Length: 413
Image 1 (cartoon, one colour):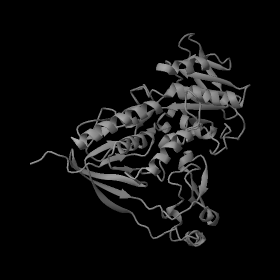
Image 2 (image 1 turned 120 degrees about the horizontal axis):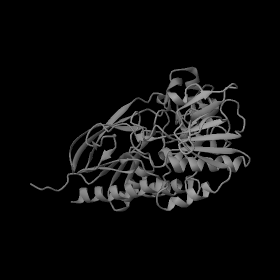
Image 3 (image 1 turned 45 degrees about the horizontal axis):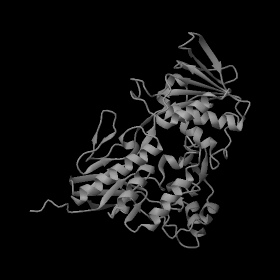
Image 4 (image 1 turned 180 degrees about the vertical axis):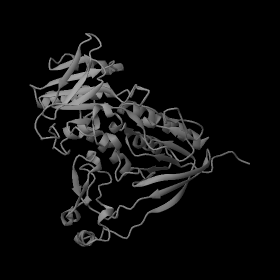
């Protein structure tokens, strides 16, 4: 009896930068690849970033290059709005069940926008972390891949839904679409399921839920983005005014046994990037960074030094104990300076919580997880990118390349 794998197809679960990189590397090594993504588009969290550190360039360029590579590679099959609901078997012979969610728009869509023009209701925009709303027929974002609209399920079976369907000249709107499932036979699985921000509502001492001007780091990215809810202007959510004094609180949920016990690696540098956003838009603004320790690994030390040299950025070694509501409704950050022992109560126009990174939805089976819920690679099943632990973009790509190589070796052994 031969030990040769029954299938040489590689399944990549997750279409963020890690999954995209793993799929491309495996396919360009000659393997057949199926890429599964639960969202309507590829790109993951990276697509929602305003800029990368340390060069502060926009992620669109790198993503678009990878999208073109996917389009040109016949070995890659992409399924969006799809999730792995079950997996059985062993290395070289896995049977995977994939469930799909209706998009209500077929591949015939040319992204003309006629359906959105016919829509009258609005729904929360998940790409902007619900900071804004979009029409019930919408393009997920300006650089979506695939470039195809989606119709929200709330209008199915309504007169509005019928108007949206009638507006499409190509008959690309299918409101009869139902959830479905199919099975795949694959030889290796790469889990590239990424991460989710730690829930700021659990940090009750920081009053995210009831102070409009307390936001998270991922929300700050969208505020600063040209296609975000404020068209790239960092504004106070409470009144849409420019902030004159901004606080960035490090380790909001990380390095805390009550929340995430580990360091999330990228938060320090992300906050330095956010400080740069504020200082670029508002040269007179003051930015305070509250930190326990600063982590700027390897070549990113230079990015830290640049931020450190900015006279408009003040560094306060402290883990704030709480945020209070000021007389005018503004957030007031309270705590004790670790170095000077000064007890402070500083009022700000805007407070940004550097919430930590935690593993996304747990795989249904077939993947071993560590104590924090991150994927541990084993025979036939490999983790890639932030599914394996907190990583920045470049490290995620490196991790994905390594996972792709191991998967290719596994299906060819």
